[in-house]
Amino acid sequence: MRDIVDDLLRVWHSGRTGGLATLVRTFGPSPLPVGARMLVDPDGGVFGSVSDGCYEAAVYEGAVEAARTGRRELRRFDAKSGLDVGSDCGTIDVFVEPFSRVHFPEFPDVAADMAIYKPVTVFTVVWHSDPEVIGQHLVTDRRHNTEMVSLPESDVFVSSFTSPPRLIIFGANPFAAALATQGRLLGYRVTICDARETFASTASFPGAEVVVDWPHRYLNAQAAAGAITADTALIAVSQDPKFEIPLLTVALRLPEFGYLGALGSRGAHANRLEALRAGGFGEATLARLHAPAGLDIGARTPMETAVAIAAELLAVRASARTTLAVS
Image 1 (cartoon, helix red, strand yellow):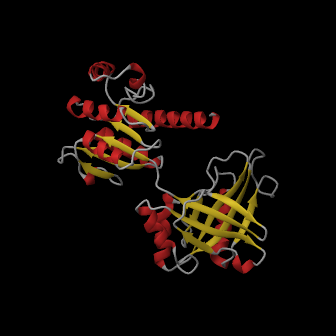
Image 2: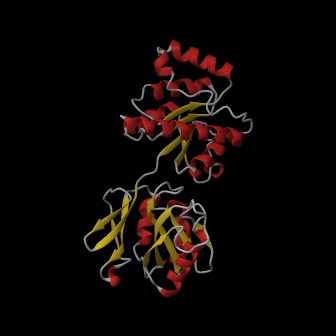
Image 3: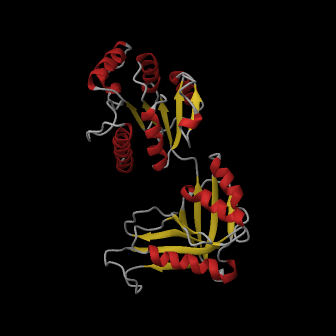
């Protein structure tokens, strides 16, 4: 829901009614995760999605009908529903409901918690033996999994919003701006850190937190505060040894992080490794560093490089999850 929260707030504050569709259950592989949402605003505009296109038109009509009639219901979409879809389309359950300040008066509080990365969970009754109970919301600050919970007389969809994974980019330049864009698209909370106040301008990195500090000092402080976890991605883009070597020295001593990368040519990386080896790092530790960062796809421009790094980041993240599942 983070991707459409501003659109939801706009509808809520307008005093008008839109239709909201939520993917609450899937059968087999799904291109979008449970909890994905589609909003149809009062003017028919569409924001977000719940499927890969198989059922978009039918879900749209369901959301429009919910907005028009006030009906709240759990609907199943599959290739046997009489819809004009391919036989390879899977089966999904979608909850459609009207959305407005009347139907969800607590929503601005939910959005405010999400904006400051405070955990918040919304329980929605998507089926009940008493139709009047369907669509009721309960908001709590307790952490839960996002999932469908089946009870004897009702089904409740639990939608939990916790702090997104972090992407911390060290250096403020065009590569950092391109990476910030890619990071936000992947759902990361992005921070730009640079000691040079002239370059570390909030206006240059919309949607990102901008910190003016020496990179190694900021990373040390974040690690001491417990803010660096196995989901955190760290990327150095400055390619200036006086910033980079102290930063990488701190980073390589961290017990965990999700990804550590550094830009630069192979020659620059050889010099980097020499400096780090002189600092006492062995080959096993240096293997934690991805440099030159990014998959080798022939990237040249900042945006192309950002795509290459984003691809490598996803590959590393997927590998880590596979290792965890096996262990």
